[in-house]
Length: 356
Ligand SMILES: [Fe+2]
Ligand SMILES: [Fe+2]
Image 1 (cartoon, rainbow, N blue to C red):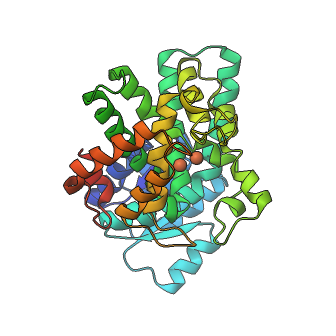
Image 2: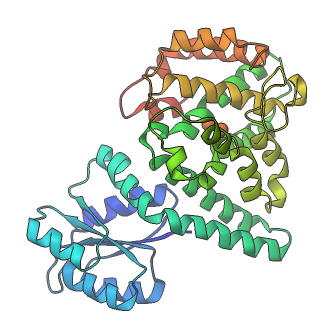
């Protein structure tokens, strides 16, 4: 798991930051002064340090200097309420990688701070996954705890992946909510045999469905214009990359098959295996609809979000072609039934959705 150290003499600020990152799945420690900070740095070598500039006794710049002497690879983000030009340039000269300002609002944490952290930790996350994979391969099979740990890491990775690009921010969470809505509708209308295990599997698969995108070069993934055919092919590799990343996990073999199949199309023209109709696992057919709906109703660099009604028309139009008609019908009735709870509100849409 990725380690973060928060250094601030104002306990409330330190706690707010630490609480936020713990919920996001990071391991967070707190120090309230420079001495305590250096002790924790030596003992735990955190991946990233949030370092307050103005502290009594030893100030942030002195701590930064000591961290640099101790280990060049630890990333340091300075935290400041004022941030004069001189302090900013001195911190950069000493090797700080970025700045955040306090006090922190929820929106600032959710959008700016998490994005800054993800940029800094992305390489660490990647190597963490690689290392864990190596370890797991050696072990052969996983015990429950190691698996859970790995799953947590992968989830952090998914969050980081989405934070790199504001256009996909929250995508997997929304796909999860829509998928759950569909599954529950199929369950209550007895259209499919859906039990708790099915729902638990759907949770894992919807959250991780695009995990393979970490292997796709940033330049393609974040391209702001139309993709060339070659770039399209590059993106289409992501289901295979997901399999590569998740393959060592013995106990999620079934999940991997679903994740691998989320871009198959009902008429057999999808990828990677051109599976047809019910040969595509049901949960993959569900995720395909949820995924397409979220893509259409979110802003993209090249077009604005479609209104819900227009997105449903598209889903209707592609019934039997791209989508399972039973799944589209279930989504449409569940969505409009719950419409009130899903009303889009800037910045807190996810929370509204997650209450369903
Ligand atoms: Fe995908
Ligand atoms: Fe997706």
